[in-house]
Image 1 (cartoon, rainbow, N blue to C red):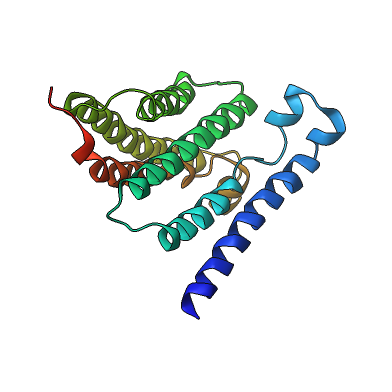
Image 2 (cartoon, one colour):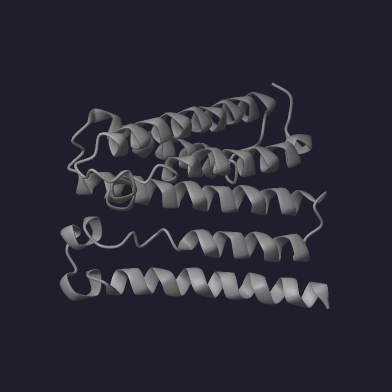
Length: 200
């Protein structure tokens, strides 16, 4: 019974995330179909977090946690998360016109994470590469923590007298913490495939 409930919750989460993307895009993009409609619309990629969590739930019921396939699927989901974060940080900061140069940092770091995680599926694994990939993932945690501070500072200095309103309408302080969360997921996957790595 619990297995069936898990499958059902996972499938509903995937469906909720995909329908959320369509709903957010419908807010403006399907009417104007311009770059501006992407940067000034509701964050269309954000609901995909539900899809990722649902897929993770389904994966844990379909693959053994000690199998290399499970670890590679974990890395694939982390790759998707970093890809989504790239899109979100690019479009959300474009709304601000990249007013501060620091707004480019999560765009570049997410692109770097996507590049490193993508290579895992196409090149022979070595310990040297896994160490470099681990370093790139740890960097994501540092950038996410810095982003939290930047966003929180921006909200404290926001145009509204209400801190709550600055959080709702300004920089979301918890959004950058997606990077450390994805880092943990990726490190779990990297640990799972360490046995496949060749020396060097």
